[in-house]
Length: 287
Image 1 (tube, rainbow, N blue to C red):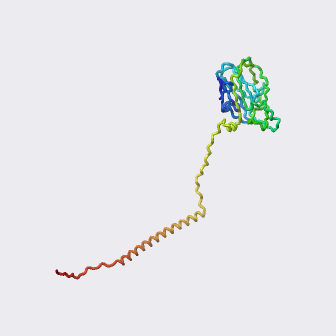
Image 2: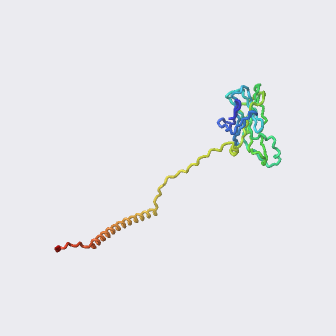
Image 3: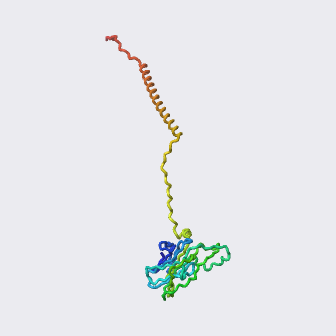
C-alpha cells in the first residue's frame, strides 16, 4: 500500500475493503512529494478510492482526479483510524460510481491531431492538501461527467481503458459538503496507473499467475472380462495339449527305461568267459 509521511492510499475494487487492488512497482519521488504505482483494471468493475491520515496533525482534503478530470473529494479533520472513501460523483440526491470502461478507437483522421487533454489518461490521482475548515454546506452538483474519450486507432498510446461514471443511484440520506480552503501546496499526491492485468504481466510489471499442476487422470482398476466362447475353446485346446504332452513324457520315459535294460543285457552277453585254472600238475625241472 503506498504511504507517505503518515498518509496511506489504496483503490478498492467493487467498493469493498476486502478487494483492495494489489499495487505493483511502487515508487516514491520525495522531490515532487509524489508516490506512483500500477494497479490492474478490469472493464465493467466499479471502484472507489480510500486514504487515511495516521499522524499528520492538521485537517486535510483529498481531491480526486480521474484521467485528469477533477471529481470532488473528502475531508479528514486530523489523524484518525477513520479513513476517507470516495466512490464517485454526487449531487444532492444521487451517486454515480467510478467504473473502468473500454477506450473508444476511431479511424477518423480528425482525431490524430486531438491528443491534447489526454496526457493523464490512465491515471487515478489523489492530491492531499492542508486545509482550513469553515463548516458544512449543501453539496454543489459536480459538473464532472467523464464522457467518452475517442482516440485514433493509429495512436502510439498503448492504453485501452478509461474511467466512466455508472448510472446514478439514489442516496438514502442527502450528503453535506465541508467548506474549506487550501493553506498550502499538496502534502502528497498518490498516482495509480491503471492497466489491464495482461498488459502489466506482458511488460514485467506484475508477476505471472502461478502454474497450476495438471491433474493426473485417474487410473481405472482392471476389470475382469467375461470369457467369450472363443476363450473357452482356446482353454480346452490348451488343456488337451498339456494332457497329450504329459502322456508323451510318460511314454518316452518308459521307452527309455526299456532301451536301457536291453542295452545292459547285450553287454552281459558279450563279456568273454573267465579261464578255469588247469588241473594238471606242472612239471618241475631240476637243476
